[in-house]
Picture 1 (cartoon, rainbow, N blue to C red):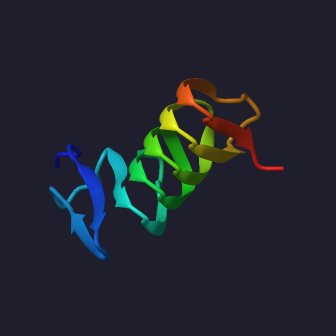
Picture 2 (tube, one colour):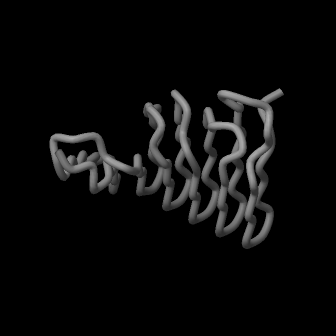
Length: 119
């Protein structure tokens, strides 16, 4: 059984396309588009958001998060000590740690990007 590939959700003008490259569990949960509002389970996979004005909630322990674009809002349950990378402008990430207390490694590039714990 192969575990390569990713789960991708892309949206354009209200249409959503789900792509499952194999029957096995994908390595990355990915959301791409404009104005996508969605809740997804990571189940230990990496998470990725790309585009503009998306509001995505990732649950069930993500390994890492990569956000690229502008005006994205992401809420994530993140495995302790993992990484968050945010590139672009005016992106906001709120995280809740799962499985420990070590804060994530955060890499911000661009203007007005924020990564904060849920209070």
